[in-house]
Length: 387
Image 1 (cartoon, one colour):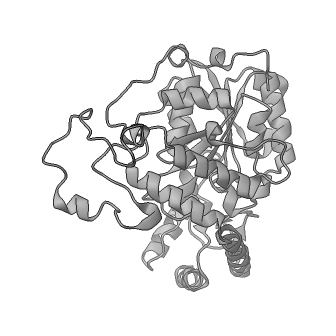
Image 2 (cartoon, helix red, strand yellow):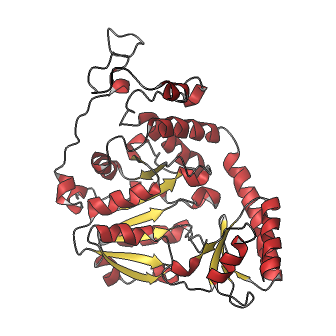
Image 3 (cartoon, rainbow, N blue to C red):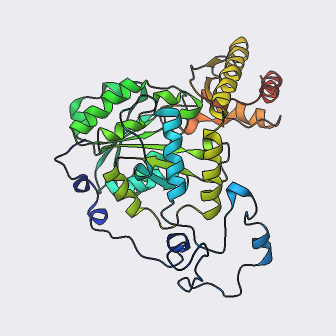
């Protein structure tokens, strides 16, 4: 940690000087105050229709579902204390072994999925013309969001990310690292990322580490606890990926207390809906008490091996993967490019990712998710029919 630095100096002026708006509807914050007992106050602070929600909403708002209880007739608690505490426990459960520090709710920035965190960080740290380094191929959203806020995006080869010169790092305001990387599927070891983080911190360059798939790869390789060593490290997680609920839109960031406090000030008010808040908190709590992650990794490892074998037998070139998807070079086998192969598979009810749109990739590559054995067999059968 830079004890002699004020991290707010490295944020946009608008963030340094912002004060969160005060809103009505803060039922959770004032519930249980002296004189109220266990009854919620009658809310005159929110300008809502006094007739109340339609019956269809009341019948489907999650009431009576135990741990997922939520009430759509009130605003969510914008502090998201339970969700943040559960998220911190989740990190500790899978990434916190033998660490000197413990992630707490104060280190957590809740979000409406990881995409919101990418935008939030670009919005709060970049001035127009600031240089951003993005190793490619990788998730396209980093470049898109940074350009929206005037960032000068420069790409480097993903395989060379650990070889960046001191000048390259010092000239940048922000460096992105997707780990495990999407779409290549490779995982960089924690110690290597730690050294990169130290170099970034020494040059006062932010390192944004996207760990959306880390629980489906090797959670022990997470660098979440590096936030205790540097204010310049920001790590994000995507709960929708882990729990296979992309419609829920839920994720969180991990940062030093100082950086997290600034980002929580700047994020949109009520950025996580009441149902996502309640369901997400319940999902995390249930996961921590179970072997869900371990069972997921076992299944992924087994089925990834099956797919790699079947693809190789058919002359495809699957790249080494450490996670729940595989990047495949189809150029030597298919007799067609990635778009043509994807279209052919779609005719057989199989949807794959054509990777021609990724920077540093082309029409030789598709990405395939690892699914169940039955589904994987259907993919193989479709490949046999198309190629």
